Amino acid sequence: MPPDLFDAHFAEIHRYIARRLSEDVADDLAAEVFVAALQSAYDPAIGAVRPWLYGIATHLVARHRRAEIRRWKAISRAAERDSAGHEDEVLDRVTAARFTGPLAGALAGLKRRDRDVVLLVALGGLSHAEVGQALGIPPGTVGSRLSRARKQLRRALGDVNPLKEDSDG
Amino acid sequence: MDELDLLDRALPDARPPSAEVVARARARLTGPSYLPARRRTWMWMVTAAAATAAIVTLVFSLVAHLTTAPPAAVAPKPGQALYDLADRIEKLPATSGAYWRQVWVNGNYMRAGGLTYLVSSSHEMWLPRDPADRVLTLSWSEPIASPATPADERAWRAAGSPSRVKFSCMDGRRCPYISVTRTPRQCMYAWDASSGGVLPDHTVGDLTMADLAAFPTDQDRLREKLREFHELWYKRGFKQSFEKFLPTTANLLSQPLRPDQRAALIRLLAGLPSTKVVGTVTDPLGRSALSVDFGTPGSTLVFDRKPSRELPVYPRTLLDPGTGATLADVSYATRTAFGATKDQPMTFMAASPGTGWTAKRPVIPVGCKENPLYKSAKG
Image (tube, rainbow over all chains, first blue to last red; front, side, top):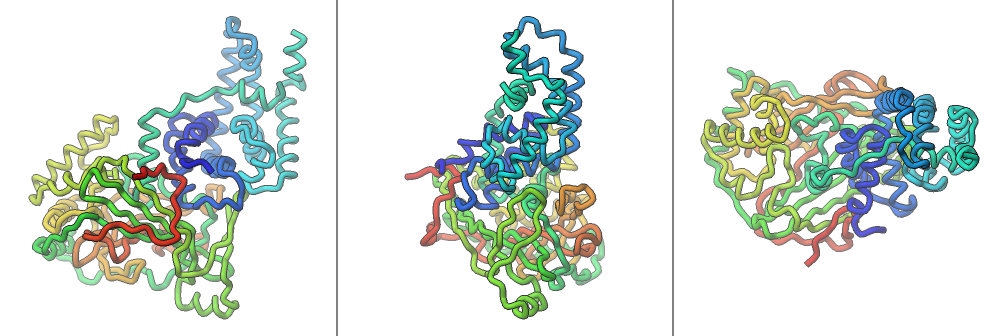
């Protein structure tokens, strides 16, 4: 266990919340995560510290569910408006930015439980096992939620494999 | 690149938290203010209750022995009981010591298996008078449960005296068993040398022991002193009026003020239009107390993620009728819902006996472990 969990993890928890809600909300909510962590007391029996903190963060984010959905919808709309303005970006970011709108829109339409799983993996970089620990659900449930969510994301992308599309130019 | 990689790249990134945000978050971990739900924080009050309440689905129940008692006496004028209290305590001898020892209990009333339990945790801080000295924080942070009332105790025994209890949780959340015991568990400690003598409760200002010792004992001069703190907040961008800031200063009643200073503050608070004396009540630890509404906003307990399963609560400050110090901050249900009845106590933070100045040196209890969430300053 790291000697100082706050120093080790505050920035990444803040980033995770800021990307799901906003930086302003993250300023307070990230602190709440560590307050709750302090009050809960870490139990090594439940696994690693990092997923535990992400689980608390995800739980607190859930209280802002409507705000999060509004955010994804707003990003989706803004990305559609701005989609023509990225010609000078590097290819990677152009490719990614082209999909911001559809992906954000798809996130808004996901069930909360599925969205939590997807974003813990995509933004938090957690493994399936760690997501299971963070949310207190079996790995099989993580897999099924992730599979369902990925289908919806792919559908939003027009059933295009972005990697294949990049390679083909 | 798959959909998940693409998500990470395509979604807007966030800037790292500023140094101020990090410092403020760290400060919230270092003292009583890390329970903002039970403190009257100014302006960013809204984040209050959720942090603790969100962890477990709270199903509260009536707690008979904690019901608000009717006012003991009819006050001749608003706030008269506070003026009387100030008169009683003003001439009390001031105590002193090398450390202000702050001992407190956090409590929630929760329902499981048809019984109501008090789920609590204990905490302690040793705040040095010397700003160069370190602060010691002790937390028995593992929640423990005990039957809330004698009737609950009988029912618990009739059920075979189960040694642990599991409360309902919000979905998707790990829901651990809680030991049924009255002995605090899982002691953790942390030394902090980084505060520079600034007290952990920042809700009024970044105060040191020396700042507090210099507080005026005249009500008007005290008001002007408090205006300095308001101006600091105002310059930081918090644009509420001084009058709306003043009720927050009731937080100072739990701080190491001398009796004459405390009396001045109580008189000042008694004169605020938002202050209402509720009456004499029994506090969560069974002590007689003067219940006061300082007009600060309430917060919300979360029973479930659905908005319909949230219960607003309102705060009351319970003062020691012998010293004027805060005995407890208690939140009460605003309505009957989820097993709770309107005006029933729901959560509290209560100062335990032992709070006060001491000449003793802080001692870490045997078996107490260093808290990994703090960055302890050794040596």
